[in-house]
Structure formats: structure tokens, C-alpha cells
Length: 82
Image (cartoon, rainbow, N blue to C red; front, side, top):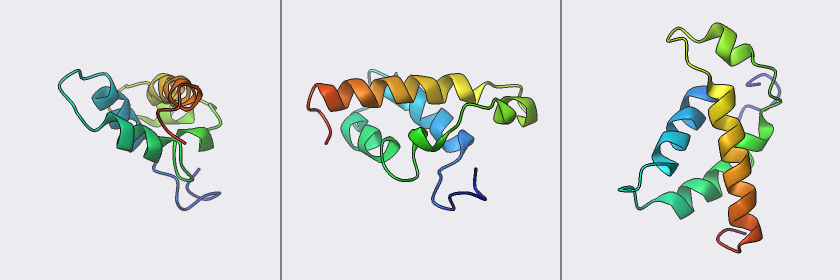
């Protein structure tokens, strides 16, 4: 995806964002979700699963990114982000 959009955060950053969004101790969710919904964020992922196939830690960033997509849409609908 970096070739198509140089602003794309990439699977590692989005995977970490998903971890933090789910951490009840974290207080930066609104800003994090706003960034994740932005130009370089999660909606730029085409869900091809290539990041899972290439991940050296055998993680599945695509699942995390899908969670971010759902959560940013919910936040938008609820008026938490614009």
C-alpha cells in the first residue's frame, strides 16, 4: 500500500493503534481514531491479507485494521469524530 499512498501508516502502526484503542487505560482514543480514519489510516487498507503473509511475528494486522475500520465508523456515526 505504501506504493499507492505514501501517507499510509502501514499495518504495524495500525495494529498498534488497535491495541491502544482497546486498552481501557489509554486516554487518547478520540485523537487516535481521528488519525486512523484520516488520509493515511485504516480505510486505505484493501484487506488483501498480504501483511499477514509477510509479518515476521505471525500477527494478523488485517484483523486489527478491520477492527479499526468498524470502530472509526461507529465513532463517526456517534459524532465522536468528524
